[in-house]
Image (cartoon, rainbow, N blue to C red; front, side, top):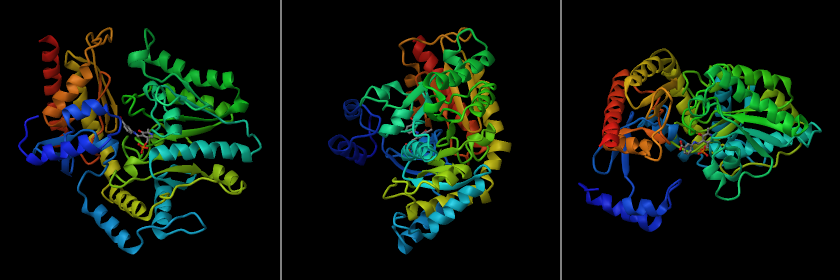
Length: 454
Ligand code: PXG
């Protein structure tokens, strides 16, 4: 990369010499050098070369209220001066964590009034696994340990998180999944639906849950965990029939349902939670990302009242983190939720920006490379194909990565998951910024098509 700024090389050298980046090919990154992001405002990022980039991914699905909100910086600064740290372990608490728990209960689905705080989404799911098993043990059913999850779901990168997740490339490293976690098919019609209609496939995919419960034995199954819409797997929106059918199955068997709301939570779908969008009634919900708009790390697990009543009878829950409910993170989350509510950001997504983004994105359906455009709220996916009618991919060409690179070079962050391009912009994106996003996306699709033909 030619550089306008000598500091870029300096930072890249620091990266080469000292930094190990997450989810990266270390050697390849050394050869190329990372792009250095230096500042941000609203929906835009700037790199150390002075390039302005529209962040179509809200960081990593998290910057709900956009970059550069002083109120969050002020909340952190004030809390750091007042009480920068105290733990919640030995029958102590502090005001920000208690006020935050109440603010979350106010927006969570009815009957979900308690929150266990963690430092991340992964830790939230680790907490879930231990809490589910503890719950069943208290109820005198200690055999109900198995958690059913889905292939290509994403639930984090700790040992439990990666095991719960269904990413085979993660399982291959470190002998995962750990025992007691099993996976069923995902409801991804576009690549896995074959000759079935979306409806037929949706029923088939949901029925996999019942088959797995019967195979493992309901006496051994503790919970089913799923993202309402799979994010990292490729913004996979199940066929309409899927969730109603899953709800029927869950009602039939005595197992807990855990919604992983790390991506869908805090307004992404135009409702506060993805489970509101689909009218699911989870027993637990994992949260992170949008909880603090990513300004500071924080995650958690929201727990239904009936589950808490059982836990209340179980003595100590021997689980927690040094940073569970960290006061500075809690103060930032509180301020973030205040802004989401007072500025009616979730309502604006539902009534204005989501319908606009979804209709503008679907205009890309006329592009020769595009096999499907789908989305809900401010989540979107564009499937890149060689043949629209048969949904056949360009085999072995890495089309998604080609397109992603064009996006990077043209001032747009759009992620590639295989040959699926995905977007999840900040919730505060305006219609004019949506126009810019879609125009840039079309340009990059054109450039990708030319590269494939050239
Ligand atoms: N659940 C879901 C649904 C997630 O998307 C986690 C749990 C784990 O959260 P933490 O805070 O531990 O990272 C996530 C995280 C990607 C990507 O490539 C997505 C995530 C993380 C890293 C990369 O889209 N999601």
